[in-house]
Length: 272
Picture 1 (tube, rainbow, N blue to C red):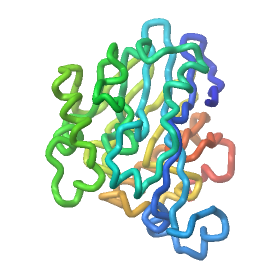
Picture 2: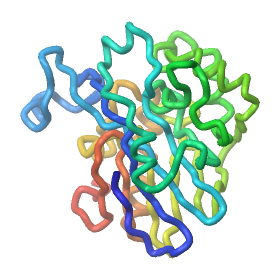
Picture 3: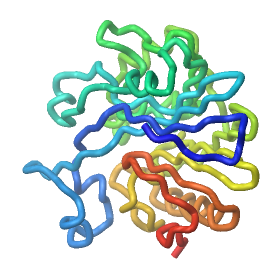
Picture 4: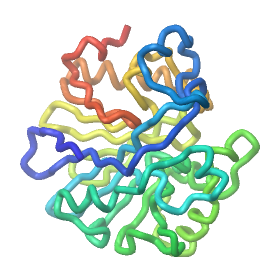
């Protein structure tokens, strides 16, 4: 758990870990040549790297908002073997900031890939966050409910989606949407058709949680995209836009799969 320092008094921002999982190193690094990363990151005998499952918590006077939920504790035997996730720890992390699962009022998904949306149900196949409403882009929801050949592997938790659909707690949106005062979900696409990022207006500065648009520090360069991105051009353009805004306004970038916060004054935020 990491608390993000803000200029606002009406909101508290925390990066929570839902655990970790192993991803194929080559797929995660995508177009970045092996020679540029192989000696800078640890990988196992299967060439998998251990990635964080970061979530964002926003505590406001009106509601508690959770962005993404990690892989969760209910995963098929096949996927457990492939990804070897650590113990689901999101509820433990919530307890560190004084909250219980029943205190979450809204869950916003950057997208519905299994490693971002799997933490919504428990091993008893029940919704964990029973008092929350869930918000996602409409075309992302439609893709998850009926994935095509390109997307099938990433949306591999159909039972989760079905349980959520039956709850009637899902709100689908189209385009940008404000979920709290000066807290905006922005639809960007690129990584997947309904990818959205979250931005917080921090009294003139900006805080971004961009999920898989910026999964790690290796992906800060706009041209470095992973093999999981369905449209490299859109991802690249969105990276440039976000980094340019951070340079102009100042602020912070929270990575999706690495427990590190990038300050706008760091050299790595350069748009070059």
